[in-house]
Length: 178
Image (tube, rainbow, N blue to C red):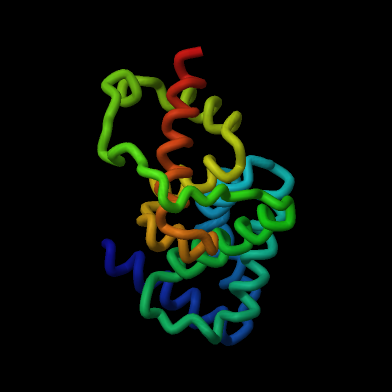
């Protein structure tokens, strides 16, 4: 069954390369919700996330010839969405504070209360985080990027990524106990 799923996506991508609007619409239906959620987690703004989603699909379909299928279409599209969302944040002039030379707490610290909190409460608290904190936390926890990759995407140092992540966790914990 998984092979049929992959074959369907490969076929749709191939049809998109040939200019099929129907195939583009099918890929859009398959990925729009997930990609919107990625954009929303990064941007924390519904209208901007919707814009990024549309722009990312336009980019993907315009550049479909560049897609080499070294990865899945979904991962390739996700990278486009994240890059567009980050660019939108830069337009807002999000500041990532560099803390090079400052020691940071161990990243593996866990809080038992943190793991038992309900997802909805965490989502509501995430909305209240400053953009810089929310972006790093989202990329690390939800999108699975490591600090080296986050540093590359955001054009910051790894230490800045780690410190933003730790500060985001602390701020999120503080918001959750309010």
